[in-house]
Amino acid sequence: MTHTHKYIAAYMAYQGIMAWYFSDADSDTFDTPSDRILKIHPLGVQLSEIAVGMQLFWDTPLGFIIPALNDPLKLAHHIGMFLTAAQSAGSFGRPVGSYHALFYMGAVELSTIPLTFVDIFNPKHKPWFEYMKSKGPSSM
Image 1 (tube, rainbow, N blue to C red):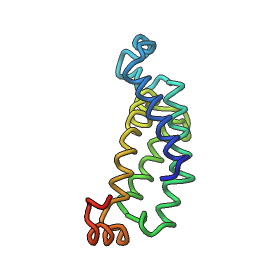
Image 2 (tube, helix red, strand yellow):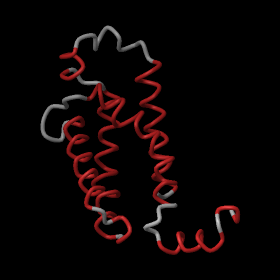
Image 3 (cartoon, one colour):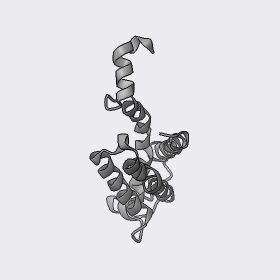
């Protein structure tokens, strides 16, 4: 994960958490299940648009190019994420589910930080794994 990607993920997580958990401004506007699916939330659309860009121009292409990231399950996740974000952003017509994008395209991005460490220290990265086997975790 590059520095830029971390900053984008942090921005998305902050905006999503603040809107999802701490904003009462939407409580009257999105008070029924159909409102939460069909009404358009501007920040949810913006977060979805950012997620579309991340999947289309960064995560999915790198999954095909970099052998260590070429995992079918991860690629399926990124393609599914692209399709979901595109639907919330209105890429296929009218935005649908932009209210829930606050959580799924925003707050959930907080998990990106620990998942980065999981990916870095995964035994499938042979040089790092061999180093840790030879030196042990106390050498850090």
